[in-house]
Picture (cartoon, helix red, strand yellow):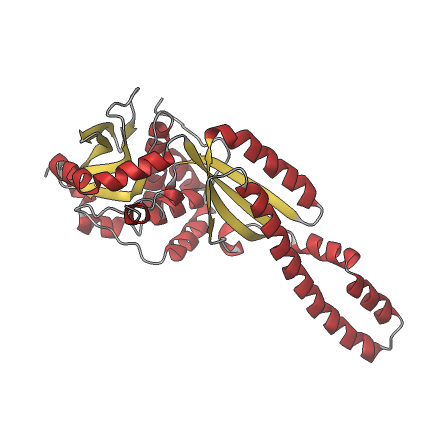
Amino acid sequence: MDDLIYVYCITEKPEISGKLSGNGDSVYPVSHRGISAIVGRVPAREFNEEELKNKIKDMPWLGSMAREHQRIIEGIMKEQTVIPLKLCTIFKDEVRVKEMIEENQDRFNMLLDKLSGKEEWGVKIYCDMEVLGAEVGKSSEIISELDSEIEGSTIGRAFLLRKKREKLMEEEMVRLIVECTHEILRRLKECAEEYCELRPMPKKITGKCMNMILDAAFLLYRSKLKAFVDTIMELGEEYGQSGFEFDYSGPWPPYNFSNLWREGAAN
Amino acid sequence: MEDNLPLSHEVTLLEVLDRVLNKGVVINGEVIISIAGVDLIFLGLRAILSSVDTMERLKNG
């Protein structure tokens, strides 16, 4: 059986310096009309639709494919602006790849233009609810008043007051989280051109004991990176005592800012 | 050159998966895969990540 063409990403330049190999074979550009698709040949017996349907359920296989996909795009990204494609975007042959480029060339050009010189960085914020709770307990006047009222109360009344305290506490914590994330986002956005909020992963997925309260991606000019990281450090210090913890990652291929259809709509 | 091209900060496989499966540009190729329930994949992956063998396979694969 013949090979199929796996497309990793779209770039402008038709050349790749150095050698990158993907799935055991070398990666090369297929260029058409000033746009290049970075592709690799993959065996059709493994990458046909039928076979992939089964393989996608194989976690270790999926995991290593994802890493491979990521690794190739990162390699290209070091030298050029890239539009990352979804995992396993596969074509029958190079002619079809060129047709695809032709069909999308305006959108690709607009997107490449927008992404040029910029990087995607991810920021996750976790919150230790116990620390935040203790902080609220100290700083909230209503809660402090309730605490002293509970101390001097009968058992029955203290029980009711504790229930009231619990509810108040929860409201205060939510209010504080919303307020803090709003301010945090405002400061981070100052360094970025675009940003988007992602769906925070639940604890059972992150495996962390802290709650993820915000997951966001930022598109920023490379020249703003230092200011961006400095801001994250400052925020970490300022909000650390309230139980907030910051985690950042990048540079990512601009997965979250490569909306082909949105850019196209503006055309 | 072909070995490791790591991100400058530690990232989890989950983040990589989330991005490559959900966020990359979708162009209809000739081979179309559809992945239903990414959360299920995440949970499945989480479960097997506890196995050291699998960890190694993923790292090296």
